[in-house]
Length: 222
Image (cartoon, rainbow, N blue to C red):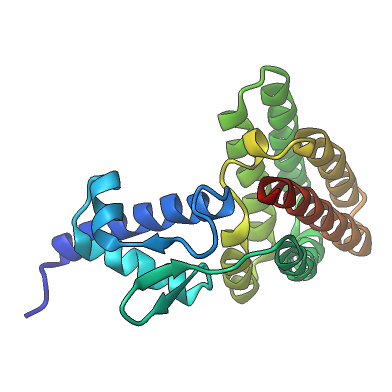
């Protein structure tokens, strides 16, 4: 017998919460490669039952963050700085294509809105309001993805983006300045309606992000 829809939806929400938390712990190296991750421990730590905890760990296994060992259970998979560079190389290709398409579809009003989000990000950075910076950063990229109107590419980008820490701004040094510079180049390309320039600017942005994250990840390994 299947659970009622409301119960299933709640469990899915709890599972997603666990996925985010454990993924962040892996990316921040709070959970090192080879660490055993037990559903009961995760559930206890995050205040959820074992069922959504186990579902979340299965999802993280399918994404490559975890593996399983007979008689042991879920184990944190190896993740290196070069792995992160490789992931962001793919991210750069997809995000660059999305930016190029977004320029072709964008209106002047949408470009104005994109610039406004960028200025809000800069203002939040000056206040050292990292939560707002992260929210504005996500809004900036979300708006570009929306303008591209390419759902399959957006889906692929979403998968790749799971390797980007949600706490990027507070955890990776130098990212605020790099992001501000890169976003200016991206918005300039939109203002000029130059698809090729937007593709290149976005690809550079993602490559820069990957390098900063890879360097941060490598330092934490030392």
